[in-house]
Image (cartoon, rainbow, N blue to C red; front, top):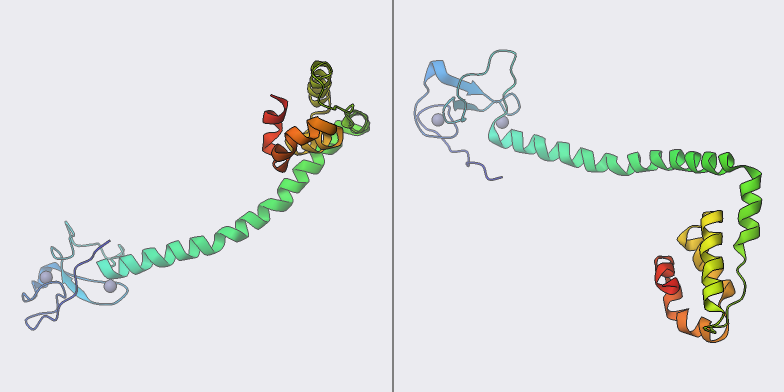
Length: 172
Ligand SMILES: [Zn+2]
Ligand SMILES: [Zn+2]
């Protein structure tokens, strides 16, 4: 935001023009105590006694200080969110109970797949069904595929194995 430069006014106290004071229509900045004509300050009317007034310069500085304070506080807010997130995660895991836990552990290991076209449909079906039952994340599935893929299958998918987001591409 551009603001008008303050001027030295030899005729009066307004710092935005060089005209003499118009006694009834002068306004003073609460921060820097400079005086302005009401019209020079861009005000439609004089502020009431209880209404604060900041000149363009002080309003801008105020705004920047406020933004700075906000960005400073942001990391702290994120930090307070982390324990909350962990708490909810632990809650969700506990809610599933030991049965689900055992089920997931049992389903985790996929049959080995060596890349033969004949075995592929069965392997894919097993992968999809266990993923549904065990509710595995992409990362877990990546780990499961890394364990299962052997031989030529492993060589084909190796470049894709770097990112959990590629699980979909591997199984496509
Ligand atoms: Zn003026
Ligand atoms: Zn001011």
